[in-house]
Image: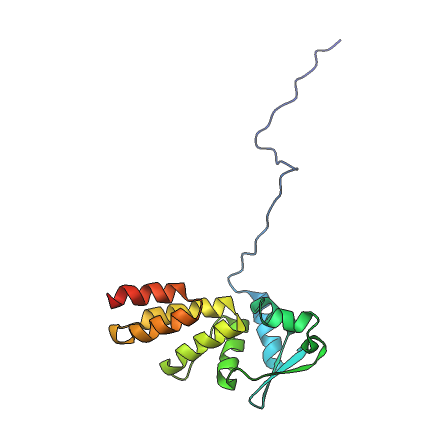
Length: 173
C-alpha cells in the first residue's frame, strides 16, 4: 500500500469563510452625480417643498437620509405630510432652503455673501442636517475674529454648536 500524502497547509490559499469587502475605485461618485442630475431635471422627484411661494421638487429618500430627525419623520411616519405631494415650510427663507437643499444633494452650496452664513447655520440646525450643520459651523469658526466672538458665543449657547462655542471662547480670551 502506498504511503498517504499529508495535506498541504497553504497559507496563500483564500479563506472562504471570512467576509470580503469590495469598494468602488472610481474617483467620481457616479451614484451621487446621477442623483443630482435627476434632481436638477426633476426626474423621479416625489415631493415638492414650498417655501415663501417657491417650489422645490425633491426626492423623499434624499430628504429623509440627509435630515433624519426633521424631514424623515415628517415624510415617512404618521405625520399628515407623509401622504402629501406638497409640503409647505414656514420657518425658513426660500434662499436658505435652496442652499440647504443644494447642499443635501451636492455636498456644497454657495451663499450670496458671508452675511448668510449664520442664518444658513441656523437653518441647518432647524432642519437637522448634520453634514450641513458641521460644514457651516466650521465655516463660522474659520471666519471668527475677536469682534465676532460674543455673537458666536450667543448663537452657540442657543444651538448645539459645541465646536463654535469652544473656538469663540478660546479666541475671546
